[in-house]
Image (cartoon, rainbow over all chains, first blue to last red; front, side):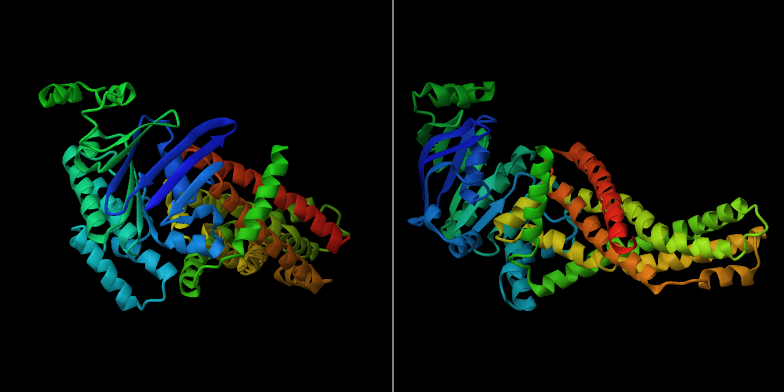
Length: 251
Length: 245
């Protein structure tokens, strides 16, 4: 579980996050949605420890991040997996090497044990035939699956995904969304996903945090998002003709 | 003010290189890879340039000797001194600032742009140590490259002298043996080692801290080359003043 209390963050005097409070629960896919520039990525980077919040507290399983010493933070980081928007796979490594990489760097397992664990995860994301391919030889969807495999190979307690289906066709995007949800539920991971894709919201939004200009404008679930009267989120959700039609049908 | 910021950030990066080291087994592999890319991959261009520039140095020396009182062995002597003292260590380091430096900046910069460095950080890996330390270690082999450059530079001078008929083989060989001071070679290697650290770290700094996209990677590589060359030239002056004056 991750609990955020009054998180603030500024860059060059511009307040990007303004007092964000939220609880992300384990075994659920928690979505942070909002327009570009609303502060989603900054909030995610604060959760990852890549940015230091200016104010507020973050608790990971009731442990305050601000009170952790360097060793505790390192341990926490090892409990985190991250799927980057660009997949961020290491170009010079094959799929298998990419997935084995965190284990090689952070554990003392034997080569055989690491290979076995990596192959299991690669099989879980349905990429067995791509083991010896380089990232450049893979499609965008396959790269995302490798990134998910690399993020979960260390059995993290927390999984963060930055727009995991951006640049993917709708069918592949659903495959990726479902894969993340299944892995989250199977391993009881606290998953936080940045997205502005309404398909993802409808597919996997167990908990949704809507940010607007760095402020928490709405919180709920995919079931509640169609019922809310909140104008700000309605403007966001029903910005496309497709979603307007969906609303008409739903009502 | 901005320059001071960069100098401060550069030294902070240098400190980070040596803390939280990467596992030995992984680091060994990275070092071998960087030796291949940075050192062995540079031998061809270094050999080619050294041979021909050594030849040009000897031809120009020979063509400028007009007085019959000046002995012909001066061609060999001047070629040796130019190559050992300046051409091989300094000129080659500046050439490598272009070749090796831009490779380092663009490879690290691309990792920054494609979030690969963020991925390392999220895993709890000291990305500065992982990326920069193997480059520093592999660049410590630069004196070997410069040694080859010295040999080929003098060989090029010898070949050009004989082929152009500027002096005899005996005169040239007598020239390169004349008044030889081993400290000059030591001086060349000392400054090469310092240039090697500059060649590994300034381009790494510009790649690691770059912001933006693909276009900025190119710009960072250019800026890295300019600053690496400037620092090498300034340090060359200081080292020469300290060791030879």
